Image (cartoon, rainbow, N blue to C red; front, side):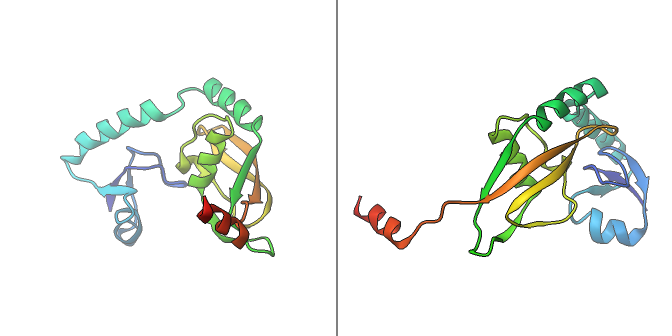
Length: 162
């Protein structure tokens, strides 16, 4: 089946690319999740628009990517999240959480789709996360996941009295 990618899909292509994939992969995964649309003759107009939008948001040169990489690797990122007593998180840390934490730590704005997690982050600790900035450049960012301050019943009672 011939499809037009609307988002970057690792191992397949970037937004605006026209690719051939197996029917089931397109029907059951790419199209329902919004990563692709079916190719039509009228869809060729959409390809040009998708490519223009991609150029605006994309880092154009390797030099720019290396500058952003230097900024990212110089940022210390702490992500406070809810956790239990044993250090296990309630849920997991998502790429969107990481992108927001990088920006709030003084780093450059990062698209959540560029953040690559090797495995889900479900416990407190330090992790290395890869951020794909360009086809040839990736930055490794150190993330420290810490427990958020928990409210005790005494704190809740004090808030109610205010």
